[in-house]
Image (tube, rainbow, N blue to C red; front, side, top):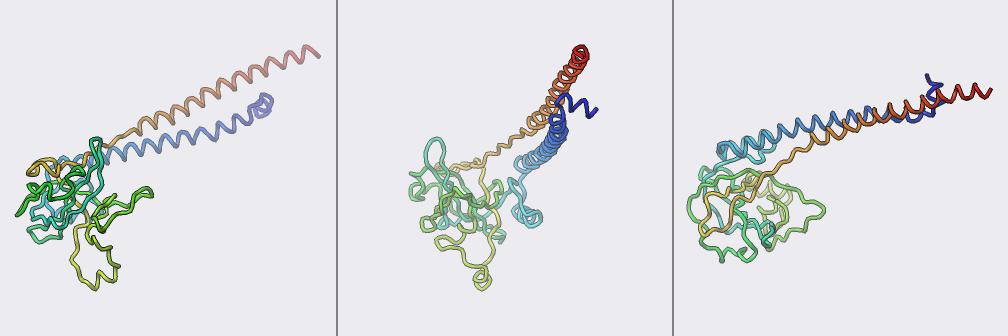
Length: 265
């Protein structure tokens, strides 16, 4: 058999096909597992975001237990401290703008938490231009838990003095306009902990005056892994078909060449 493959010039095509086929099958299987993982993730996030809101205490427990509680719907009651407003850059198709983060002090004595109250255009960034929305007294906030982010290599440096951020830097927001202290300083200062996450307020109820506009978090999770599965396994099938056709043609040509050589002898 080996001599026939060698005579037909099929040694290297056979070796390459034997090596490539399991790789293509394995890549398809990997994407299949990724598809199952993504389906579970989407189901978990939808259950969190669309279900009944947890209490603030439950969300804190979940974060402490699992290290995350992303998109968990949560309800918290407390009072806003509008002197703590921070601004996260959030341009859209209409104009430049900012998400307004304000510290909420819970009524139950839990750790303060930054609430993304919603989006404002650049012209309304100054709270003096939207005084109606600076609600005072006890409020109830229903929103989605969002964890802190890490800056990418393309993010612009935050402006602590102007309280402007370009990624969700909760630690920086806490200490602005000063930079965060070193860990040893924090222990010496004995400062109470803040919530390890922020809460993005839902679109309803609308803030007085219409600003800030809540509902900035829109969940869009695509799952294209089935396409990738079909692509990799389709390439595997194609490889087998092409090899069989190519090898069959070369072997049949080789068989025809043998009688011709004998007749010449």
